[in-house]
View 1: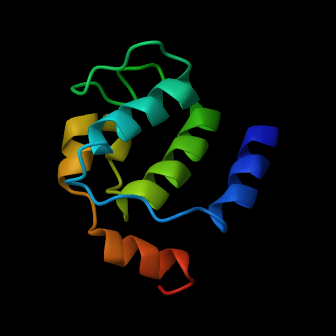
View 2 (view 1 turned 135 degrees about the horizontal axis):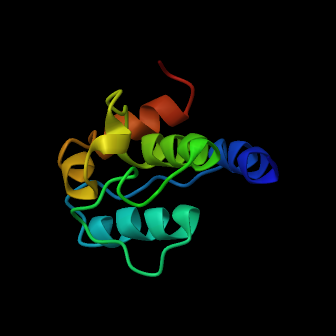
Length: 102
């Protein structure tokens, strides 16, 4: 539970994330999965389900991915990292929502 609280506290102060075409985007998404799911290596063609995600990590991962990529589809946990990155919202939309816009 403390991981979720810490994440919620950080969400409001998060810096803008580079757009989906930024060269570091692939590494960021894979690194996020590796961090939250405690995996050393995360293939780009793996999904949250493939990596053994559970209900607590689902909450943390969905919050962080939405902050990074924009609005997530309801089946995001079954989509690969590559698919999620391909449908990422432009950076301008993510920044607008982080500032309180709907």
